[in-house]
Length: 265
Image 1 (tube, helix red, strand yellow):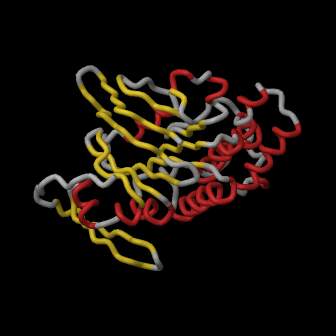
Image 2 (spheres, one colour; image 1 turned 60 degrees about the horizontal axis):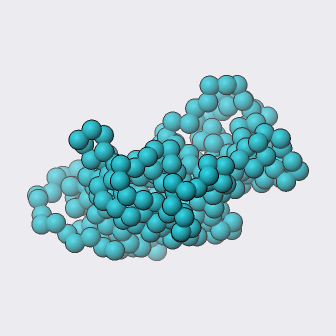
Image 3 (cartoon, one colour; image 1 turned 135 degrees about the horizontal axis):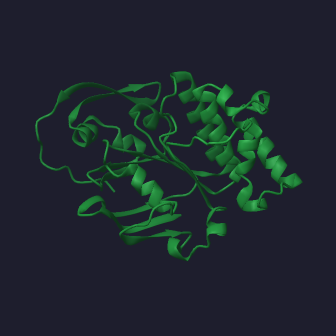
């Protein structure tokens, strides 16, 4: 379990994460949604220790994040940020092999190679493994970076807007694969996502942030409601039941200010 208690992040006098207390359960996809500037990406960076919090604490499996050795933390948590371009010429296999570095320090064993092969297979990249990254489409490159994270074989996988700049087909493929690694490999996925319908269709739980605070946190079906989403985004939403899923339509019309809705926990 990942536990956060009273997390705060400030840049000067500006507080971008404010008093966040949250527990993320294992074996689920938890999606972080909310308007731009809500603190979603900052929160993932703090959890992965890419960024220090200004206050509060994160615990991984009951151990404070500050107490984890970097070499051991890299075997427990992996993160893929929005800007993941590398500045060297690499094949897909070489990139995915980097995911094994915390385990083998660059000297691949048979076990490491097997993990790389599994990650390539999960992301359907076997036919592209010897291609250079710059030769691939945006969707193929994103699959390669996610394969690198899968090869790292951490219990917790953090993904910051992995669907950015992907067409619908590639976005669906990636979300289906994330669903499968949770159900088949027992991983725990935390994902920052802007597409509400993808969050609705593939998440177990949703954390909704606004102005650096958790406004709502609950199982997906309780978050995907017109009242909750309209309050979160300050625009009109309608929610429809289609194929057993809650699908949103939104029109861009602003909604008048309403009294603060009590956060769901």
